[in-house]
Image 1 (cartoon, one colour):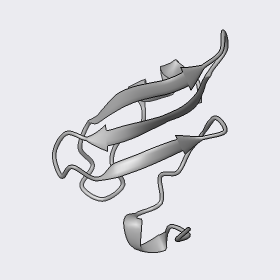
Image 2 (cartoon, helix red, strand yellow):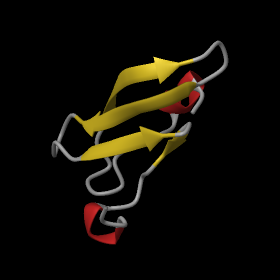
Image 3 (cartoon, helix red, strand yellow):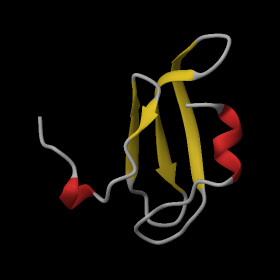
Image 4 (cartoon, helix red, strand yellow):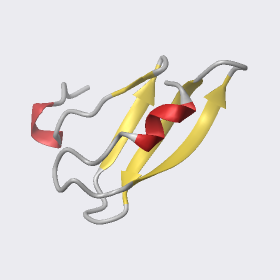
Length: 62
């Protein structure tokens, strides 16, 4: 995920602003991390450079 996506991403549940926490990145993108909604507290993982922005009830359970 590129950092500049933070300018357009919002929480799909409540449309709130997201806070980014980076666990791993390279010179081009964020590889792993999470996005947390500042309004409702929902957490969206970033895995292999892709943010999983599906609402919690639609995400694949591991």
